[in-house]
Image (cartoon, rainbow, N blue to C red; front, side, top):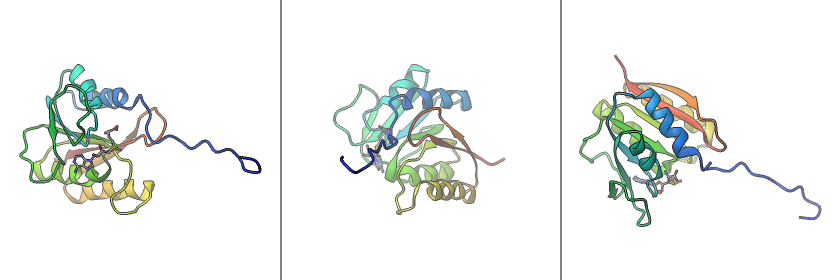
Length: 160
Ligand SMILES: C[S@@+](CC[C@H](N)C(=O)[O-])C[C@H]1O[C@@H](n2cnc3c(N)ncnc32)[C@H](O)[C@@H]1O
């Protein structure tokens, strides 16, 4: 590193993200009982939400994971809707489909976006997703989790 400043990049993923997000979900959606956890990786958000009383099904393709209800496949718009809430923590390429699915089925959602699916950088991607939800008939607001990395949350609800 001689001659160069040492860099301390902001981590993309804070280990507290699952419990912090689960608390937010519980606060915003106390009446919801059945959640789809989109792109849930190893199922850690599922564990946190289940501990708070929700019935959660995680969609992703990890074989190494927690013992939770898990649909080992990619989530698509063709998935039958048996939930009253959609959640996603850093769901990468599944973020757009999460918003579109929520709008199509008139369900609320909470998502913590991370990388875009179209080359957009973080701030334009956040604006794009909020606009997408609005265009599809959802009222979308933003909050932030008290953590490092990508911490902004989009919360959408059907209008009216
Ligand atoms: C950055 S990881 C985040 C995983 C986890 N939510 C976390 O915070 O640790 C992104 C995940 O998105 C999953 N993924 C991407 N597209 C998906 C889709 N259409 N359906 C389900 N999972 C998807 C990938 O398999 C990967 O596990």
